[in-house]
Amino acid sequence: MSETHDLDQYATIAATPFSSAERAAVYRAIYERRDMRHFVPGTVSDEVLLRLLRAAHHAPSVGFMQPWRFIRIRSRAMREGIHALVEQERVLTAKALGEREEDFMQLKVQGVLDAAEVLIVSLPPGREAHVFGRRTMPEMDMASAACAIQNMWLAARAEGLGMGWVSIYDPVALAQLLEMPAGSYPLAVLCLGPVQAYYAEPMLQQEKWAARAPLEDMLFDERWGQPAVTNNPPAQP
Image 1 (cartoon, one colour):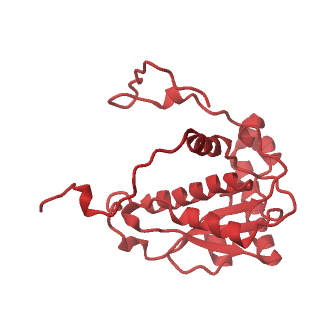
Image 2 (cartoon, rainbow, N blue to C red):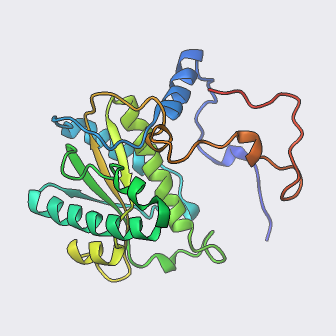
């Protein structure tokens, strides 16, 4: 089969460069995004929430499969059910951490009862029908949904809102609570809402749980483990 790489066959958007201020705003949102756990009373307007969902829906996805579904949790009873599942897993996770159990139990790991909005990001059933880009890497449905979450996260920061991704729960139990169909998968519990302030650095770094590794430790040349040779060391934000 022949291939064509002629861009003229597609409708296009002019490659207008971002202004320096626009470019700086993109990087600011990236560097100031935080996984928030502390929320203050307030609401997220439907207009803003829709903007955030549209940002998520414009994420890239492998084979353009768009494997994200959003469940908005409004009732207190459902929030309490989700909170209970997180607390149950929090205890089990702490025990699995051994000597760090006590330190872990001091961390705030969720804001399900405090945040203005709680959204469940789920993968739908029938994903096996999408073969393009997934034949050898079926997990790309999850990677694509993670891109949607990141889009929402950055947009939330630009809107002056905090967002936290909670993943400490039994996905089977959560799926049952939400009455999700067989084959679906609850990937994330997102807590979204107003915050008093953003953490100056990632919360787990502030709590001395972990630290961001130097970028140069993540860069290889040509093959695994071969240190990258750069004339200009990566700059800190």
